[in-house]
Length: 370
Image (cartoon, rainbow, N blue to C red):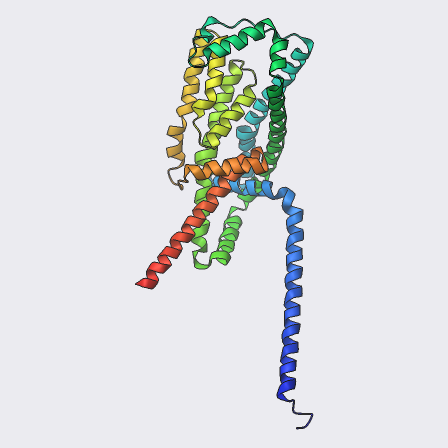
């Protein structure tokens, strides 16, 4: 056979060489793409939480923003500016005020404790009448009024653990406030370009889920709106109303108590449990009239979610309480205070999308069997 006509063996070797060459090229291209993706992710990692929180705020505020846009005659930049003003007024200002009471109260208490200016008055007799814990609280209070240094020395391990937790919580709250402020600014930009943002999300969902992409995209929007408005929004309202009352009655550490109320509301535990200690403290240190009014207000704050949640959940997706609880706790443990909110939203979104995916698989199976 002449050299101009390749043999089957040479054809096989050439095909094998081409396959190797193709495999090497694909490997190099994939490696370059993965390297580029890894570099991009590492650069954006510090801003991931902020951008994600901004997207959540933008999705939740879509409908109110469009009503605001219609009110200002379609001027998007003006509507975005008003959104920023309202966002900072509603979210940032109360948070800063409560943080100030927490930090300022802690500093004043530490200064007075160091200088020996703290004088604990004898406990009122009505403290002993409190159910279950009245006698123990009365005895400890009486000892503190007679010899505060001895009581503090006895409680030193518990106080040190509490102070470390408070310092971590205060630092986490400060970082969360800064991240929240940046997220609101980015969310305003996203709202100005809301059509492009929704189209991009739908295209991305379509690339991932094919024909069910638009369905998943709408489900994601509905879930985010439900969790932010029906759970986080109600939690912020309850914490703000409670915090204002704590500040008005001069409750020590009002910001800390408001933060505890917020945490209870987000993780779907009864807020009434969180306001019991402040009510007892005001009851034992203030006049009967102040204590009764304060107690009734705290009762109102504890039950107001029963009215607000059905209204805000009306057109959304109802997410199981256990999903919100696990998301909030896991998010807080992994990301700090801001994870309390992000974790609840992300896990709720993942849960609803997973359930929808399973439901779609069941429907496909049913169609195949018919």
